[in-house]
Amino acid sequence: MTKEDNRKERRSWWMQFLISVIGTAIGVGLTFAVSNRLENRKKEQAQRLTAMMVIHDIDVSIERVQSLKDDLESQYNAMIYALSHLDQIDSVPQDTVVMALGYIVSEEKDYSFDMSKEKIFHSSPDTWQNLGSMKFIDNVQSFYFNRQSFLDTYNKSVYWQRPVPISDLEQINKVDESLSVEQYIESYYASLRKFLKEKLTDGNSQHYINYAAWRMSSINDMIEDWIKLNNENKFLMSITDEEMESYVNSINKTGFALKEENLIGTWRVTSSDKLEEEWEYSKDHTFKVVGVQSAIANMPFAKGKLKLNITTEGTWNIEGDSLIHTFDWDKYIMEVDDSEMKALPGRQDMLDDWLKEYKESYEKIINDNHGRKDRSAYGACMDASGDKIELKKANEVQYLKRKK
Image (cartoon, rainbow, N blue to C red):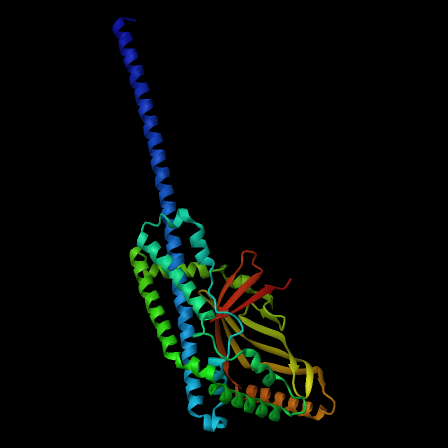
């Protein structure tokens, strides 16, 4: 091999080596670039989810305070009506009396919010410090500080604390066993009206009522401030209404879609110790419910447990995420089981009359609905085991467990 050939061979080897090194460097560079991009993408997604979590928490807090405001307005209007009819207090409707008392009688426990989202936000400094907008972080911190200040004021300030201790109502709630049902109800509401009249003219109540406009103005201002702040938050983080809706749907989804073939069979209600039910779903899209509902009775003439044995039938269908029940009133059967009811001494006739009237009232309801079919829709999903179903309707949640 000539010297020229040797030079060519060395040059070829160096070129291959150089290409190999460059290729490796490019490969490593690409790997790091892709890895960093994926890592940044995950970080951005985590930060965005944190932002949406907080924004949703603020929205929920706004809805809760708005509900409080609506309740206070209804109670205030009832109280003003009762206050303007003190001389005719006996003519004030029962529901108005109860609602008016709600405005001045203290609550059994402190008002509160769900603090879990706030704790998550503050427990992850690496997340919230890198959300990309210091203004957003400042807004969130200000909101949580403001919300806590509202709780402290609402639960402790003399301007917010209802002036009448709830314990003052205990005497009225005691049952006089010497009275008939009608006499007891009449006596109870007469006592409530007298109690309301006394408290509305009390100095503490008058002082509390005088600050009604200030309290309502404070709540209105706070709600408006929170709404403006959260609208700014969505703008700062470029979060659309569609994204928020998708986020809310994702956190509310607790299981998997319910399929017809998985529904067939018998299920038991597991949500209440006062209610025992079995739901039997058939392939022909009919269902049958057999249930026992019980309640402890503590009446002026009797004590014990009253049971209702209920059987009803109808048809079912699954539409999207909803389970549709159509109840047939012509197949509704209810039997009253009073075997565990015991009359007080000398009150058996009164218990018998009440049971007779109770049964007749249910029979009338059934007869009045003859030929009627009621449609009821529940949001439905199934857990991973396939043995539990969650049914949601408004604020009610019911769970069914497959009967083995």
